[in-house]
Image 1 (cartoon, rainbow, N blue to C red):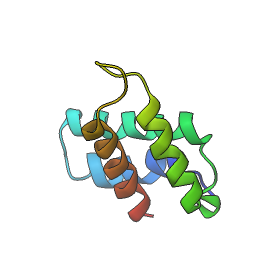
Image 2: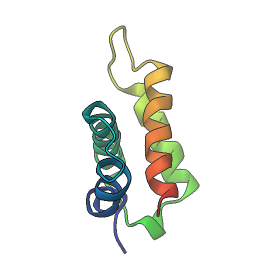
Image 3: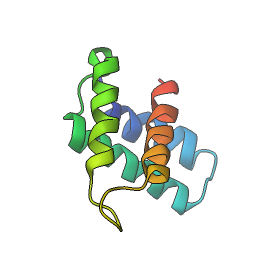
Image 4: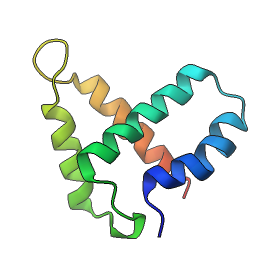
Length: 90
């Protein structure tokens, strides 16, 4: 079973982002979010992603350094939306 980052690179980017000719900023945003996912969850196979995996990802994002002390909730929400969009495409 593929991981979310493998699916992102092999299928999501070519079909959803590049295939629809979305701008480079959008592509960079998805890449950044998937990079956070990979670092914070160890990128488990998609069939092994549980509610606990997702909750841990969100909690870990909230603890990441940000401009003030930790990542802003709007940034956390953006990364969660992007990861969710990729996962729905599977």
